[in-house]
Length: 121
Image (cartoon, one colour):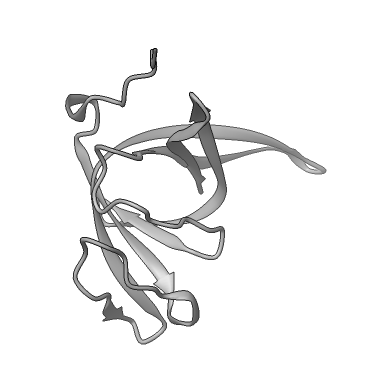
């Protein structure tokens, strides 16, 4: 019996643009061919994700440093296109702001990847 349900589309209201360095750009099933962005990146529009902004406090020698970041949830069934490969070499754009991918974590349920949690700064 599979008790893990996908993240409902109602909880995935956002769209992002993934910027893939041209040296690693790949065609993704279900998406049109990547288009050129700034001569260095190809862009892939991704639909039905969740984008949650947060603020991180990091200790530095001169005192606390606050950085704005975010967490993106990409569901393996309800986000589109499917089979997107996220890496720390990529950037993403949300609401006109560009973020760098800092970490990608696969969340596994029932021995399959359920969704990805992507940390960006």
